[in-house]
Image 1 (cartoon, rainbow, N blue to C red):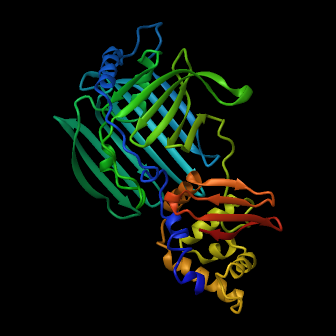
Image 2 (spheres, helix red, strand yellow):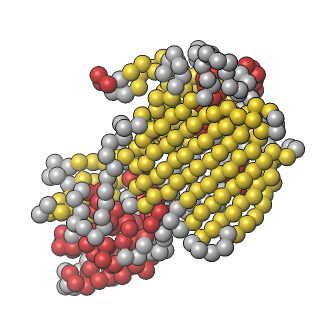
Image 3 (cartoon, helix red, strand yellow):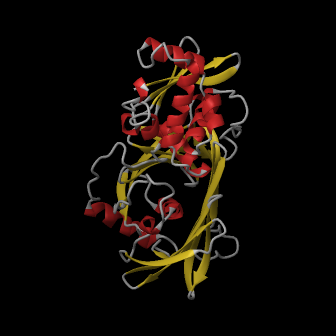
Amino acid sequence: MNRLAPLPLFGLGVVAVFALSSGAGTAFAGDEPAAPTAAFERAATVRKAIPNPVDPEEGKPSLDFKFVGDLVQTGENAGSVKYSIDVGTFRDEPVWVVTEERIDEFGGSRASVESVLFLKRDLSLWKGEWRRTTPDVFVRLTFAREGDGFDVKREVTRGTADPIVSTKRLPAAADATFGWGARLIFLRYVPAVPAEYALPLVQLESAIPAANEHEFPTENDPLRLEVVGGAKYGEGKAAVDSWQVKVRRGRNMSTMHFVPKTRDLIGFDSRIADVTLERVVPKGQGGAKAVYEDDQPAKSWKAAFLKFGHGYHLAVEKWIDAAIHWETMYAYEIEIGGWPKERSIADFKKEYVAEFLKKSKHRTRDVADGLLRATLTTGEERHEKDGSVVIASHPEYGGSIYHFKAIDGVWYLFRIDQ
């Protein structure tokens, strides 16, 4: 097959790129120093000053608060997040009751992650439940503090099969916490001046089965919070004053913005190194959700990319076929010596499609969308003068370069380079 013989396209390019996960931590790797003792001590002082989570006296403000936002990935509305903090009791002791919900909608699939967490007054995790739901798999964790750690029960249900149940013991510091709600409560009570803080975390991720085969391993890192202070959120005339905090755990970083006076969350972005993986913006500011139909002509370069990626991941021949402009790709491969001009375009298409199907792992739609989202998120997008769009994937994600253009009003993939 000439150009296919050493598999430069599929061995190092397309397959390697599509095999990586959303937010894969193995990319942009770097050592993260341990949080200094002073940062833990400052955090402990704040935690001691957090008020008791009880209903207020009549006429006084409640400690409850809520945030609802839109999730933006690759420049599009890709779901929503919701954090709700209430007060309650557990074993006759006041607790923070934190409910978190995240819904991911990208490329045609939908997945949700929900949790209910009971935190002591100082935000130490006491017990909780965590759930992840996709069309193919349901995962449920229940966990509770027992002595020097947590007893965790895990249930994994695939399709209509009976759940697979397992248990795990997780050691944890006595004041370890977990979840977005804990940091939101904590940041309502820290001093406004610049300073660094650190919180120990329960490593619950180690008990959660990977959503795909390329998720990064759990890192036993604390949560580091750096209060920056006064800043701006938004751009141009729409920018508003904010109070900014940078948050880091291992290689994952977030920049959070709050209303300066109330400490209500405005929005945040999440990154690995200098690559923005996603943004959470105030509800209603994420724009309209994009709709992609793989069986319809691609009306954008991203639709062509997803059609091609879905065809490969799910091993659907018609989508691979429809995503590529074969005449243009055939001519290009002949020009660079990647395909002999003596062989027909029919042979060219047949062998290329066959190789994609051979390499496909027949993934589920939600897993495929996570992998495709990672490639788009970490890649470099260029718009050329001829109207074509080029996506250069990060070297850690295969280093392939994908070329798309509109032909007679329909977008196609017409070239792949290394």
